[in-house]
Amino acid sequence: MDYPPLHIIRASGESFSAGVEEHRIEGVTVRVTGIAKTIADCFKYRSQVGLDVSLEALKECLDEQRADRATIRNFARVCRVERIMRPYMEAFSI
Image (cartoon, rainbow, N blue to C red):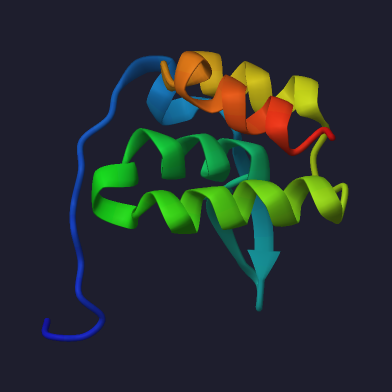
């Protein structure tokens, strides 16, 4: 498959299963991660995604109140990026 370009990663345990939501789309159940987990994943894979993309996602999420800080912090802990995200979370709270 040429498009879209894919980069496959492997995850297990809580990092794989946490934050998964089920949605029905055209009669099919689809499992996707929620916004707070997706943001934590962006920071976890920031070398592939880009720090600028991760920061923009975090800022928009907080500005639009799509997830609360405690939930984002929880998923940051699950993804082991809490210390990396902390200064940005504090900066966006001003």
